[in-house]
Length: 419
Ligand SMILES: [Zn+2]
Image (tube, rainbow, N blue to C red):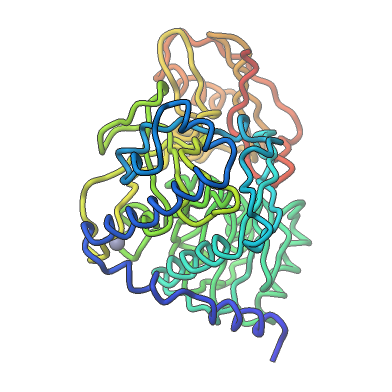
């Protein structure tokens, strides 16, 4: 038996069977479980974590004042920037909790080192394995992971950084040799690989493709699905202890509400109604070593109050709309960079990569790495797309040989130079 398989067996043994059961509970029963976990987390944070003790005292509240998701509004919002390097967020009893130092990806230039504990790692693994099962992926399946974008793997690892034709031919060889059941990776890496497989005319379809860590554009979902297998997207911010996965119905992402609480807030920190767009803010219910309470992410999302037809009681997040850092704010409008990128890709233009740089309030530089059959008419197409968002937008085009990805291997469609 290979080493990878032994590791997988171990992971399988530690799956908390409770999580398997919870997914089928009614929403009201899930809320009771969530409340119980929240009360216990808030009590521990008050008792053991200097920051939370101070902030609750300052607000004149105690642990008994925060008993459900709505009560979280009594507490301050936290962020990566606010928490970075501050020991006051670490519990004074962390050494008893099996701490391990992890690091968040630095794709936005905001690195953060943080502690997980035995219990939180266990919960993260349990929810991930539960979510992958919805895609038809069993714990013993062999998954080829295109690493990068913060992803790693104890299974078959295929480096997604620097994937030229030669490297991808090697990947194909490895995949065929290893009898792979499924793929996993960031969408842009899987897209590059899927294009290559299509060019080679090979049948490399597996039972599912697990995407994560980058916004999945509908055009990418379609193409990857046709070439590599049905795509199941997952959302995970392990630093915030949050995760959500698509089930077989693809109606959105089922939130792991038995592990975390999702709030969607406007720019002033007020909750928005279900169906409305806002900034995803999460509370982890399992990391007692470094509690993540009301941790505001960079992700724009929409929560839904509809039930999924699969019958699971876990609530749905209906949309992920990209990152707050991918917004282009002009004098007339706000353009969602993820939607814009999807729009551009949907036109099937002869381009290898592209990027929008906002250089001033009303001016964009559009960087295009062109294919050989690029012509003036394609420039006009992109200009027209931009002008549908804002007719007064000023655009300049530049044509570099290539557009580098982030150090984590992700595509960065929007860069803002505004202060
Ligand atoms: Zn479902």
